Image 1 (cartoon, rainbow, N blue to C red):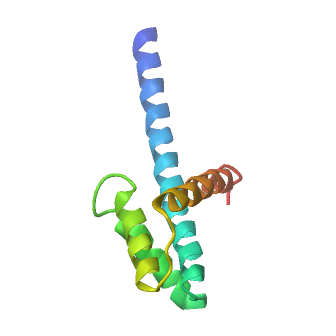
Image 2: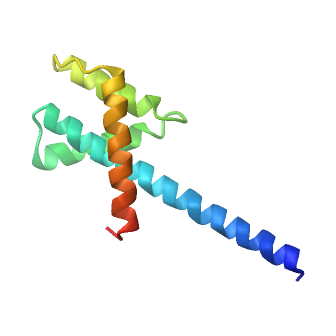
Length: 107
């Protein structure tokens, strides 16, 4: 194997690891977002966990964050709570940072 091939293989492995870490962080962020929203909806315990799982699953409907955001926003509005899309996105961003830190710390 040449030096170039070794470097290419190394970059490919790093890319794969980075993508896996990103996927884990996004899934954890969605779970944390679901738990936060469950609290806003007055849910706790097993009911909050089930709601958080439904938020995680919503992310598989379409690429991007819009499916998660719209699910939570619609559920909050159905419960009579109006939180702007901007505020929800800010919460998602905060939770992504938290999720990445938790993963990095091995949690």
